[in-house]
Length: 92
Image 1: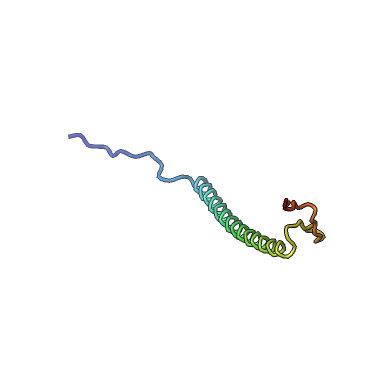
Image 2 (image 1 turned 90 degrees about the vertical axis):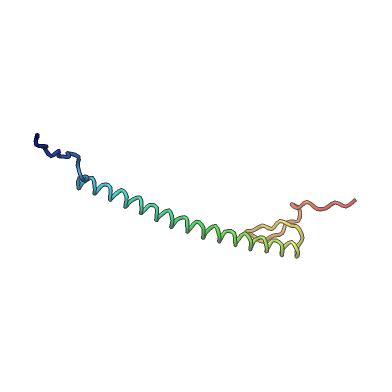
């Protein structure tokens, strides 16, 4: 019987230290970017929510002004009411 020789596997068992460092750095950057995107999305949500609340405030104020002055245009710099720019209901 012939003696069997042990076969040596020449495949590498790990990446180089330089490759490992590169992988770790890239993954770390990706994680940081994902955290930053999450932070920005959270800020975006808060800003959009605040915007919606201010739009509701404006709508309420517009209703109050319409009840007091009728349908008019108000110059937001001076507060001047302009009745001429508003179409009036024509009754025959």
